Amino acid sequence: MDAPASTEEKGGKPTESCRGLVLNMMRFALHDGPGIRTTVFLKGCPLNCWWCHNPESRSRKTEVTYAAERCIRCGDCVRACPEGALELNEQIIRNPSLCQQDARCVEACSTGAQEVFGRWMTLPRVMAEVLKDQIFFDESGGGVTVSGGEPLMQADFVEALLAACRCRGIHTVLDTCGYAEWQQLDRVRRYADLVLFDLKIMDATKHQQFTGASNDRILANLTSLAKGQSAVVVRIPVIPGVNDDEDNLAAVSGFLAPLGLRRIDLLPYHRIAIGKYSRLGLPYRMGDVAPPAEEHLQAIAARLGRDGFHVQIGGMS
Ligand code: SF4
Ligand code: SF4
Image (cartoon, rainbow, N blue to C red):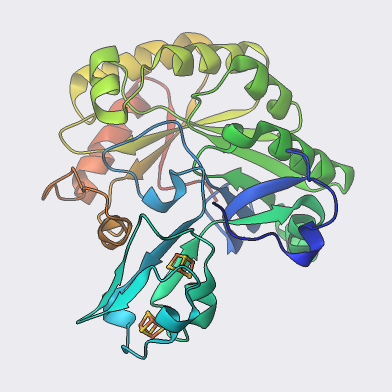
């Protein structure tokens, strides 16, 4: 069960286009498209990448988590829980079979040890946040980016959000892993001034192994986007030992060049998210793989550059 609706969201059943499950809204983002942006991270993703930097965005439900290092053992959350799902020992123990994910413990916890990932927000509420920074968008050439998770899992909401931004003259970016029905992507891209499109692994078997899904649909969608004249920046996460080999780079080059897609951002793997995996009770499958060295990233950029691509290390700004 998800967190209770806010007062704003009560009174009539909201439709999928007027509310979204939002993980986070980041104001003054500088790497999710041009200029100063507000990035709306939505919850839910169809892929299960080993290196995922936002594991809290995978589930399509709200998730209550606990961080023992922030806990002062006051017991307020235990008393607040209507289900008797919490027990205070050396640390708080949650009984998942009793927990209803209603986040009462989060409201009761003053230290942030109990935390909820995801909240339902109506379109007007998201737009109210967005409009706070319109002056910065206007001055910097920025705007709104919808990211995730995978935004296209909430295609109705994203379409409505980007359309509302367009109405107000706000630049729009869709950041997608590309794994969606073409009809959904086609609807949303019409309201996106730019699409940031992840291209992870070209080999189909390897893609299935490391992301849990085939890349057929992703490659087909990227092809259709390019043919449909959408502005696209391809984003390649650089994952040592997974997709940074010559075979993959040559395949990337051979696939993108005929499509006329010349702009690539390299997004280096990092290990900052490890703590989130343990909080969510998820396994971290990258072991002790280290982030790619700067020289290695430069070498990849140079290699793709020789094939005529304009390559940037890090997200665009
Ligand atoms: S979310 Fe927290 S308060 Fe609600 S049932 Fe679960 S443990 Fe209890
Ligand atoms: S309310 Fe927060 S700080 Fe207090 S015991 Fe619960 S988790 Fe720990």
